[in-house]
Length: 471
Image (cartoon, rainbow, N blue to C red; front, side, top):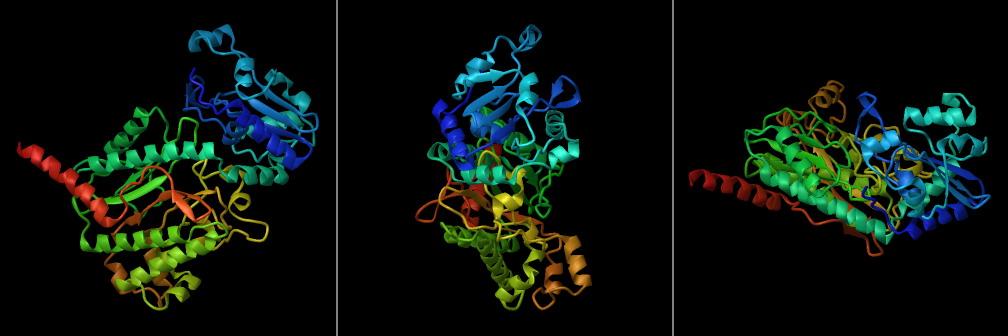
């Protein structure tokens, strides 16, 4: 068994910091279990709960933990392997031996959890059905009641602690983003007209496997970039198209990377593709330049939207005053999602806590408006936050039809010109950054980003194949 852990003191310090912040109480942290695909012993790949990983580190199923602040006790609940288990797994360290690696000295069987849970026990919102069922059995409440009795105080304390990344966490994220960058470059070099999207998913997965890590989320690999979360991989790549790849890997300690590149299937973008790609790249650069401690991320999102509007006006798709267009929401014809999100042990960090608690504040409430309701991060960023920057242009025929039928935003959108882009698709460019004293710093190994840099990689790849074919 390979155990990828920080020093035991790291986990002890994290738990002590939480104890100090809360001051009193008993905190229950649920780990994840194996989850069956289609019969009991055929499991989905296991992924431990990220909060459990943060405070207790052990990436193993069937564990639950408790931080008893009142009595200064840290407990891991779980069951030792039986001989029936060992037949299938081979000999493994005892739970007590594993607990010692994360500075926990008290280990109890799972059957004892209910003895330590009461009505005042603090826990996070459950995101798996089995979590809700367990909480119900331990608290004596109904399933729905138990699921809704989570602690907002605990959410806020953990979110504040986990949002600011330590140096050792940043080293892990850098590893994840560097592998992610290598994965994207491998895909960019491998793509050829005539291939299927799933063949490039294979290239991406191979890169992760070569580093013995997992993907941080199911990859988006598509010639239909206007579909924001497209996990269909059956399309054939053809000359003249663009391919959008949004994918990431995890580090050995489960920290995430998340990057997107859009590139031509052939060696070069056509004129319209290049023009819109450069608009997205310009918006990306403007957003990165605005990243600094204290900057309100919602304002940076709107700045990127303004840059997109200005660029789209230059090519004749939009018109009028850019600020007025953004204030009216006209940019949502092309930019329906958010500029970015927090990232750490989760690719959308701590999103299971609730977006309002992670990306917003008591005074800054998440919008319900189209476009802004998809902005997962809106509050001011602080030194040590890790965020993604991912502006895009997505031309969605159904949205054109709906807005045009209502003559919506007619003072800002040139519908006649937009109709000629109806089948254009979508473009997204995404990188990961940590907020620093001076502003922000790119995480991971840099990957080609400008249209000229992307074309240079693609042209070299395509031309190399042609030379080999001639030989």
